[in-house]
Length: 173
Length: 98
Image (cartoon, rainbow over all chains, first blue to last red; front, side, top):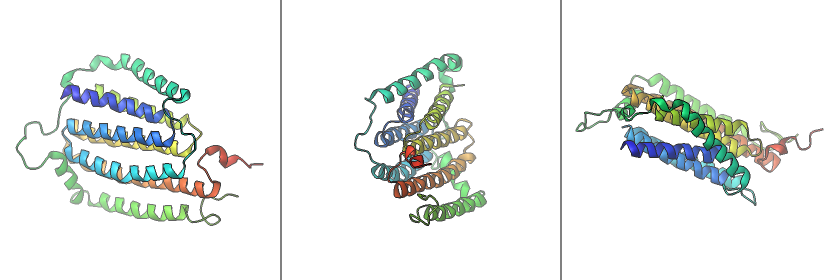
C-alpha cells in the first residue's frame, strides 16, 4: 500500500505538470481529470474514503463537465497537445525542476511517515471522516449557512456577468 | 517534509507557475487555478487525516463549495468574453486599443 500511494503521488505530480505546461484546454482538462483520479486514490490510501467519494462525485461529476463544455465554447482549429515542442519543453522543465528540488528535501522520506486515519477500527460502522463531515450539520451550522449564502450570491454574480452584450459587466467598448 | 508534503507543495507551485507565466488563453489559466484549488482541497483533507483529527473533515467541504463559486465566476467571465470578443484569447482584449 505504501508503494501504491507513492505511485499515485508520482502520478499526481506528473498530471499537474501536464496541466501546468499549458496545452490546449481539451488536453488540460484531461490532465485535470487524471489529477483528480490520482488524488482520489491518495485520499483512499490515507483512510478518507468519504472525502474521496465527495471529491469524485463533485469534482469529476460537476466541475469538469462544465469545464469540458467551456472548452467546446473556446475551441480552436489546431489544438496543441503535449507533442508540440513548447508544451513538451515546458513540461520537461517543470518535471526537472521538481526532481532537482527534491534532492534538498529527500532526507526525511521514510515509510513510517504513512499513517492512515482510523487504523485500529476496522470493524466499526462509521469511518472517521464521514463522522467529521456530519459535524458540519450540527456544530458547523453557521459556516454551512455561510456557504449556502455564498452559493446564492454567486448565482447572481454569474447572471450579472453574462447578462448581455451592452448591459453586462464585460463589454466590448 | 515527507514525500506526500513534497508532492503537494511541488504540484501547487507548478500550477502556480503555469498560471502566472501564461498569457494566451483564459481557459488554460482557469484550469491552472482549478488545479490549485484541487491541491488545496487534497492537502486540507490530508491535514486532518494524517493528524487523525477527523473533526476537521468539514473544512474541505466548505473549501469545495467556495471553489465551486470561484470556478463558476471564472467560467462566467469566460462566457462573457466569448460573447463580447468572440474568442478567449487574452490578446484580443487589447486588440483595438488606441
